[in-house]
Length: 215
Image (cartoon, rainbow, N blue to C red; front, top):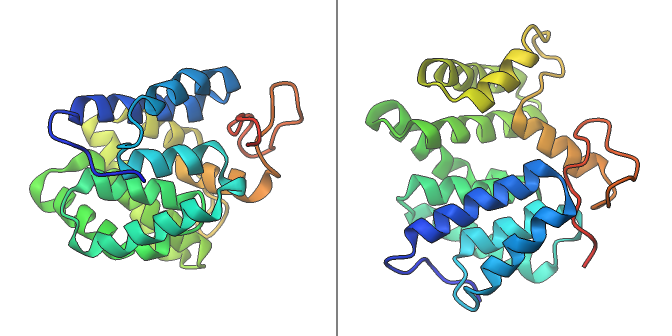
C-alpha cells in the first residue's frame, strides 16, 4: 500500500514526479522502464500521489479497480490536506480517470493560495484543472475565465511550456474547442483505446502520449 512521503525523501519524490511527467510527455515506452525501476525501489512505501499518478498517466483506460479505490480514499482525505503540491499531484492523477470533481474544493484552496500567498505554479495547475473540468461539464464561460487567468500567470511568471501551448492555440473562438495541455490529456483519455507501441496509429488529438504496453 502506498504511504505518505517520509522525512528526507522530498527531493527524491520531486525528482520521480518530474521523471513521471517526462515519461508521459515523451510518449515512448522505453522511457517508462527506468521510472518503473526507480519507484519499485521505494516499495512498499511509495508515496500515494506518485503511485497513483504512475498508474493513471501510464495507462488510464486500464487502471485497476484497486487503484481507483485507493484514489477515491485519497480524494476523501483532501478536505484536510494543506499541501498545495500534493493536492495538485493527486488532482492530476484524478484528471485521467475523470475524478477531478471530487478535488474541486481542494483545488480552489490552491487557487486562493496562489492568488494571496504566491504559490504560483500550483495555482496555475489548479486553474487549468478546474477550467478543463468546467469545460467538460458545459460551464464554458467559467472555463475560459479560469484558463485565461492561468494563461496570464504563465505570461507574467515565465512558465514557458504552458505559455507555448497557449500561444499555439490563441484565437480559438469563445465557447469553441479551445485546447490546453490538460485538455489534450483529457481528449487522449477519451479518444484512445489504450496504450500503443511506437508505430501504431496515433491519436489525432494527442499523438503518441500513452505508449506503455498493456499490463
